[in-house]
Image (cartoon, rainbow, N blue to C red; front, side, top):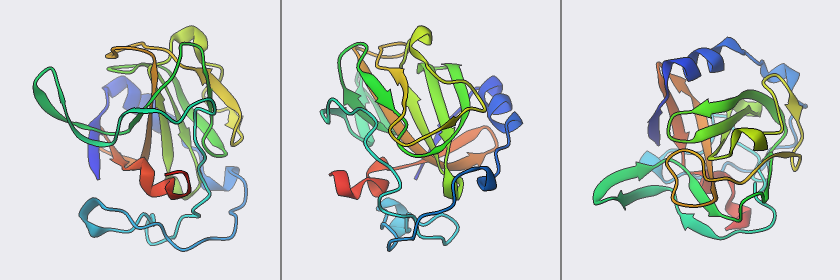
Length: 189
């Protein structure tokens, strides 16, 4: 599990839109919990197993990974990468990985622009590096799994077009708690 710093404005916007799980679709039957690699903990959230098919791949035209979750070197500095970078072409579609409600869609430090969607079980997905004009959803909007929400760009700290895709289990103070997305996508690996 890794922590990702958020700007105060982002936290205020995220926490200002409280979306209860009851607004989201009723849960599907649960499959056995997906086991996480971080600290030997389960991917279950608060002890609740997560369906293994809850999430789907966010960039339907490619599965090419340019940078995986975990430690990496950027400009000679070791840093922890809190998501999966999916290499794609400018303008390739980005789909919602699961049903949910958009918490935030707009500017974010480092990402240029991002979309954060709340899903069942308190999980959130993060989609980063889009250009503002390519964001197709608004805060408070309900989205369906597979619905186009934006297009691939290279905004923010980026060296080319790609989607930064992350999954978070919550927010603690001014920090988003991110986990390895592969723990929730084992059927796609």
